[in-house]
Length: 260
Image: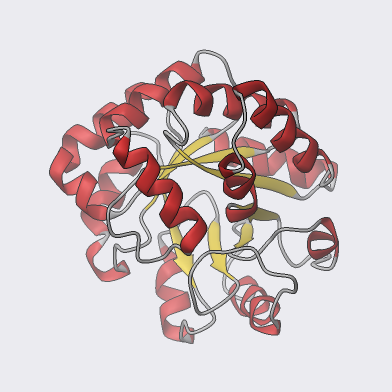
């Protein structure tokens, strides 16, 4: 069974909400990212998304855009992120995902990407700019190798689109809380709660709410509506504050522990 499924089954049995953390791979460098992911796992992260740096991250706000730019200056590629995944898999049991735009996957070659991702110990793939209508080929290849293609839904998703997205989805549904880009927000909009209700009526798959989560009280306000939350920009901003590697690790670990 895929590690994502195992993790959510465990969380549901324990009555807990999962904390999924996004980090930009290669910011400030790959060695720090590797140690950061391990520290996140120790600090309560249920699973980690490794963001593949891309030159045109259309779904991301300024914090993650800047991080992607720094990682690109370091020369970090999708191949590097998959090699990082392999190293992490030898150290960690938690589910690992990559969040990547489609161009790097297409350039890598679909079959080569899926085969390499499977060998690396990856569990899931998120591709925010891959339309549902064009995702069948990648989804089928990933399923063949036991990986999940995570579907995203937004407040603007129609009832028909929600039905289509959940039909062949696996792992969990990534529910986007706002009609906009990533970024920490003080309050979660009502549209996020409404989306969770609409998607829940169509599937029993775990639901994870992302885009805007930055405070523990936001998580507690969700009650049983979401099975997990995704924290991204708030973590990336803590990395951006800099300092030596140990300072970054301690800063991020201290922040994440507030959610447990």
